Length: 136
Image: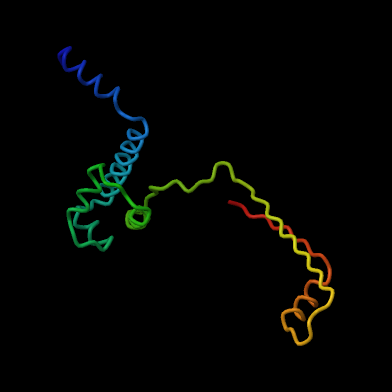
């Protein structure tokens, strides 16, 4: 490669946004995984097309090009069809969220014939506090 071509290539590469590069890399990796899985199953594009229930053969070409912007739905469909993993669902650092529910109700004089006040009086006579933990 000539020095001029190297200089032009270096210039172009220096202008690439790192986030855009990461997106392109991810798309290329997904396309490669799909192609490898198809090869392992000895599938042609038509075979994958039939299994995922699509009717336009060009979609498979787009998926394998490394430029397609996949939806989560499509990635899950491909995972099931090809018996591979395309989405990392591991949680490396689980986050604990603690939620406190504090309810207090004081009813001095419930109105007569008020169903709501009757329920509130019987349910919330004293202060109640509950703590629930969710794991994200």
